[in-house]
Image 1 (tube, helix red, strand yellow):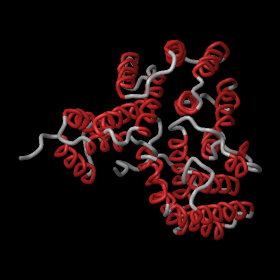
Image 2 (cartoon, rainbow, N blue to C red):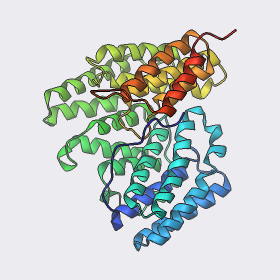
Image 3 (cartoon, helix red, strand yellow):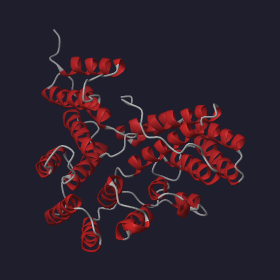
Image 4 (cartoon, rainbow, N blue to C red):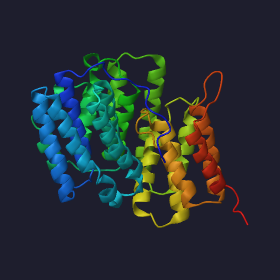
Length: 385
């Protein structure tokens, strides 16, 4: 399913040397490592992307925009094979792989047209895509990522770019440490925002499985950092949830267990935009991602898992750039058309999309999106005789 809207966020008005170097290096790393979890992607993309990485880095040192453009083009040449070579990584990466291939190509177009601020926004999107993919499941460190990240001045990046860059290069321990340092001393990086807590919980719970570590970190935050009452209540809820889940032991990775967690997370949320159920939603998404990785052939259960993934995504995603709710629900309907599950999933998706395109005075769903909804409605309804 295609993206339903473009991001409204804007980047800086221009790309200075440091920003350009760190952003384009991040493009290279994100695209290079998204070819797979191993350090041995197919040879031709490896050559194209590693060559683009080297060229981008060298050009950045000299603020050579012409070389940057050529480096981006070489990255695009390599990312063009991402879709074909990435099919073995599971359907949950399909939307992300498509978005990466698209955004690398768009970055080239924007750069060639002299729209450097627009190119930078595309780079930000690429880091978001990479973060979303690499925090899906438990994962180990990457020797390749360590080699690439050596010598990169991550201290010169913003906290968000630094964390996402480290995840893009599969340096999970360093990324987790960076988020924890920011939570211990928020005065060094500014007031913690939603993305930081979301990123931390995804890294700690889905990637690291470190419930006890997360509980200790959040408890220390409450004890040592002044914060508004609403945030303290939210964090207290997460700590209590982490403690309760830790006592349950290992959870079964299936839709039944995930649905129970989703229901509990919804009960914890006092209102739709509340985040008190975040721990339950992140935990549920982890179970579901593990399930679909191992059960692609079981249509009914797999369809339910994708539907529930769409629900969890609607609660845990703070980014507009790698929003996967529509893709997951779309997949669920197509896997099990003309079923009770498809009807339930379509009802959820229709309300979700209408809410996204509603303002105080009107609702305007773009024609392309409405056509897709109409197609899914037909698939969700009774089979025609």
